[in-house]
Length: 229
Image 1 (tube, rainbow, N blue to C red):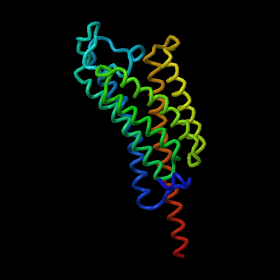
Image 2: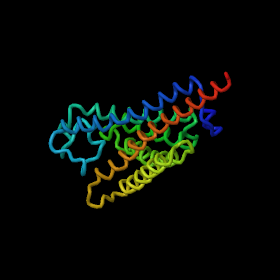
Image 3: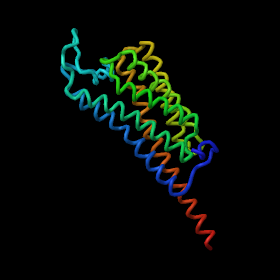
Image 4: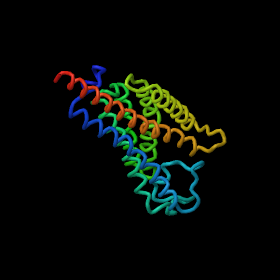
């Protein structure tokens, strides 16, 4: 954490451990896409990625009267949403500790993750208002966090452009989603553009920060060798 505050990249055994934690937490968000596909495939009736919300996969009952079973695996979707956002919090913490993410980005991503955990824990069938609030937090605050994370000095030029662009796309899609604008592609598609942009950006950050950790470790090793000589 001190490294993030000082704007320096951390080194040493602890930094190496936290860099691995950050990498695997960042990469683990991919599970959302996998479990979303599995649950949607078992949904009663026709589930559309274009017109249905992501959170509908986490509701036990649907239909006109709310008494149709949607998917027996609906719990998996809620678990997946909560896990996705818990991973976002862990990754943000690890990246702050190792100094590859500043406090602003870390706080934004952590707050977004906490909001997403609420959305996954309280599905829209239990309390629509609380669920929606949590979802809005992860979409808006998460997008801003990605944009800030994309500007960190330790990132290479390609990663900076990619992550920042994905954050901008996520933010725009989130605002369109909240306002109900889908431009003919479907409101579910707009929501997924926001969610998937945050997801892909997180994975890009995970690989970029792992490469940074390796460069720092190699540089530190070379410095130690020079000192021994």
